[in-house]
Amino acid sequence: MSKMRLRKGDRVYIISGKDKGKEGNILRRDVSKDMIVVENVNMVTKSMRPTQKNPQGGLVKMESPVNASKAMLVCPSCGKPTRVGRAFLDNGKKVRLCKKCGEVIDKA
Image (cartoon, rainbow, N blue to C red; front, side, top):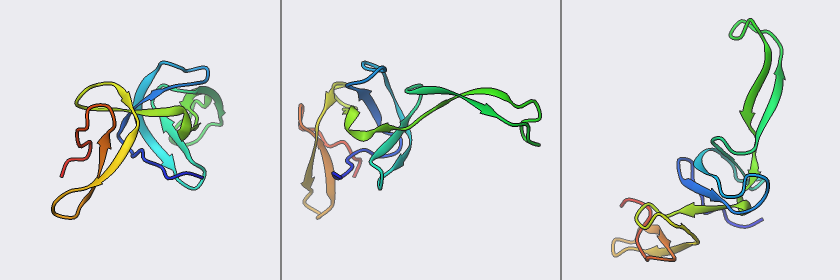
């Protein structure tokens, strides 16, 4: 298991699988399983039983987790899928860097 360099809310680009080429924001992540849930990626149809919240029940389309290795972070400044680097600022704070343009991804 590798270190997960993606966070909730990051915009990612899918690099392999049936949804290759799609972009979306990360909704949830599971660090122990190295999985992320990306909006409108890996959509599945799930049968839901009627509940008080959803009295109708029926078929519901929802996102399913994908492996984090299938996603690349999209740099907010250059807008390209990139690998993620790490660096320390002068004040000692650790930040993520874009490997393509060198810009800081995290806001200090």
